Amino acid sequence: MSGVSDLPLAVSIGDPAGVGPEIIARAFAQRFELALPPFVVIGSGAVIGDAAVACGIDLAWSELNHRGVEGIWPDALPVIDDAFRGYRYRPGEPDRAGAEMALVALESAIDRVKAGHTAAVVTAPVAKSAIAQIAPGFVGQTEFLAAACGLPADDAVMMLAGPSLRTVPMTVHCALADVPARLSSELIVTRSRIVARALTTDFGIARPRLAIAGLNPHAGEDGRMGSEEATIIAPAIARLRAEGIDATGPHPADTLFAPHKRGSYDVAIAMYHDQALVPIKALDFDEGVNVTLGLPIVRTSPDHGTAFDIAGKGTARPEAMIAAIRMAADIARRRSR
Image (cartoon, rainbow, N blue to C red):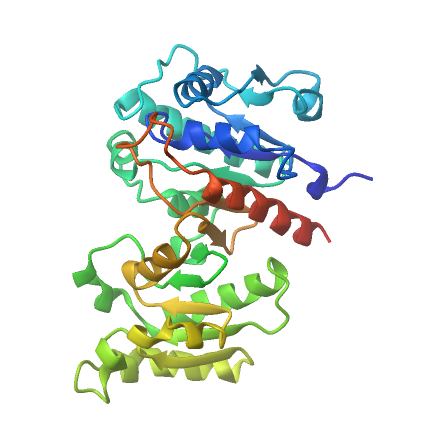
């Protein structure tokens, strides 16, 4: 009997003026060489075809039909593009129509996995500010996925995962000045529980080790550089440990990512966006994956942006998209067991 792991993945095109179309095309072109799982793209086949031509990629695509993905996959990229005909490929020139395509493709990809037609969602990069102009309140794909699954935003946890490191920011898309007010022991406990559970169910780590960073320089240095470590972070760690979760800290963030430290934990819990993303992008930029933990569906994405400045020039690397495709399939397979 077939299960979730036998289903194709759904890949949303992202902003069509960015590098999404070409990195999808490059991933598909290496499908046999890299033994990639079958996937269907939600977006404009014509845009992906034009991006392939612009970047010198040999690509054929076909609309998904009664044959299903498996009947198309050996010869052509399966695409669902009913809602996107007529859009002209203009790399590096984002516009309202492209933002609308990115949003509709994201919604459609989520709907397909929720309906059981696909095993997971892989999202190409979008321009958050462009989508927010047509969908006020849009903060990012992680938060959008949480709402689509009927969950509070805090229950969808962003983890950045690469060959060298996994990191999770406690606060994400907010100004740095707002971080201290947004932090609480409850937030750290709630999100760390989700992380620990997901590392077991989705990544096969029986007893995950969580290293929790401090907020301030030197983890506050006994209160001389801030009190959040003593009043917020340490109490959260104590609660997690009392629940049997292997959590340590607060660790000074300036040493937590050193080579000799990274082997002592399975994930680094950071307090804010750049504290988590700077090290992962420094170490694993070309293979970093953004995976959303805590959802009833599987979602991954390349851990980079739209890169409008290089779109259509043939220089965008596909490794992060390939890693996101592999990770989505691996997590779906583990969950199906």
